Length: 234
Image (cartoon, rainbow, N blue to C red):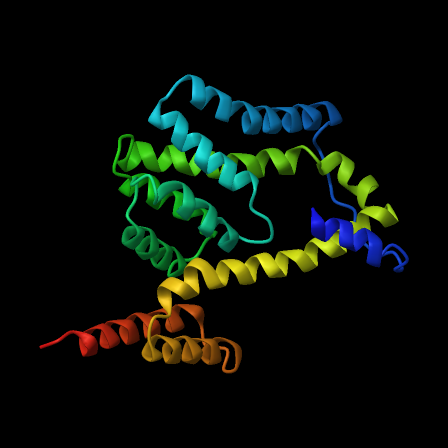
């Protein structure tokens, strides 16, 4: 919100940006209903959880809220989920970080990390049921937020005020991603000089030498195993 306000103040006189119209087969009635459903679940679920203390409802509310409040990229979801599932003891911090590393090693959106958390969750539902529950709860807000604003989006983004606000939001998102990179990724993953060297090597392989990501993941896995073996006392 602050990024949008700063954008309005700083970029309101910027020249309008060109854009390509998006197809929107969804009617405005369906779109409005999707927006209403989105906010009804977001605001109503915490009240329902308070009235009915059920773990399945708690899980759905936590992952739906995380999916609703992620801005800029999947990595921003990490501190939100960690603060929700680790302190209550549903998932250990080691299992959380191990799952994050595994999610980074496979293709696809980072939101699929929710299925892993639902599977390894201590309290029931877990396993397949927990995975499906958390996965649906995480992705549902995205579907509703795509269907809802789509018919109105072209009209909205032609407005200079909306374009200025979005410029500010885009800049603020960079800060959010940097914050998520530092905590929990950096604070948990870079704990020694060897870890730092391995991270720098991976960065250079990706951005300087354009190495395929799967090969960088394999290199980091071997390097991490070698570092662990070297630091274990004989």
